[in-house]
Amino acid sequence: MTALPLSFAPEVADARAEGAPIVALESTIITHGMPYPQNLETARRVEVEVRVAGAVPATIAVMGGRIHVGLTGPELDALAQAKAVMKLSRADLAACLAAGRTGATTVAATMIAASLAGIAVFATGGIGGVHRGAESSFDISADLRELAETPVTVVAAGAKAILDLPKTLEVLETLGVPVIAYGQDAFPAFWSRESGLAAPLRMDTPGAIAAAHLMRGRLGLPGGQLVANPIPAAAEIPRETIDPLIEAALAEAAAQGIAAKAVTPFLLGRIFELTKGRSLDANIALVLNNARLGAEIATAISSAA
Ligand code: PSU
Ligand code: MN
Image (cartoon, rainbow, N blue to C red; front, side):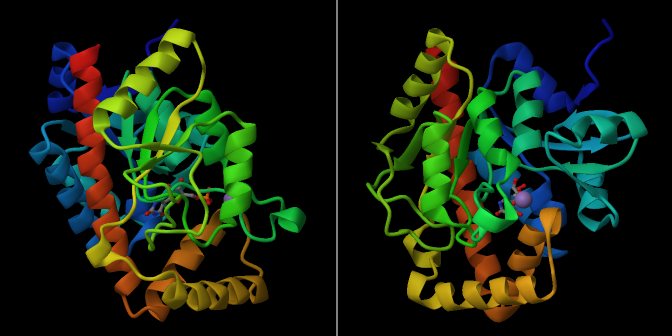
């Protein structure tokens, strides 16, 4: 068997050797989720946030036929400005590696890479889920099935509010994915703290989330956990404000025939324009908040393990 095509940044290799806490970070949010230069600035700030909270950040992307676990400064710079970067989910990861192309990992592909690298915790903005109108489009993000299969705890601000959140929660339940609201009963809705839906589980400490993660491992259950961490109150956009703008963006996507992988980036881009940048400020605040909680959970897991 040939070795895995994984390359570790020196800091990540050291952390692995010492059993120190590591938080995986995705790269699709950099290439397809935010405009330049805020994407680069945010990626750097997220890494700082993880460090300040006592863990080592490992931003993941595919370059030169290898999965990079931890990017150097110049690699991050290049990725943030690169054009024609592939958006990689489970289906595309191997093809991108084999062809030697550059690819950014979505939640699904980042979970696969984190799991191969032995990293238990991953922080992002919001997971993909069941799109509105999925009953005719069948558009359900591969992120959901990945949560059912790959043993990584994912910290997100819920699922993106452009989605059908009730159907997303139903599918997660069907797939046996624990959905844990952090510090509140309600399932958060990305830009807003509340979705109007109750979360199936609630936990109030990183230690409780770490214990549940380790217990799943002891039971031999495949799959991860979704930790739904509400956006900080100061940064939230209330549902009444954002909902009509989401509706408008969805109508434009339908009118323009936007489909498949292009849907989420298109909607995030239009909502950015319709909110005059406020959605991006909120997105940045919630990712930083998730990075911090991810570091706390990773720390709790490594001290218990
Ligand atoms: N979180 C963000 N912005 C993003 C994403 C997450 O704050 O752009 C990305 C993630 O990589 C996630 C993807 O996996 O959006 C979902 O894409 P799709 O709906 O096509 O599965
Ligand atoms: Mn999709």
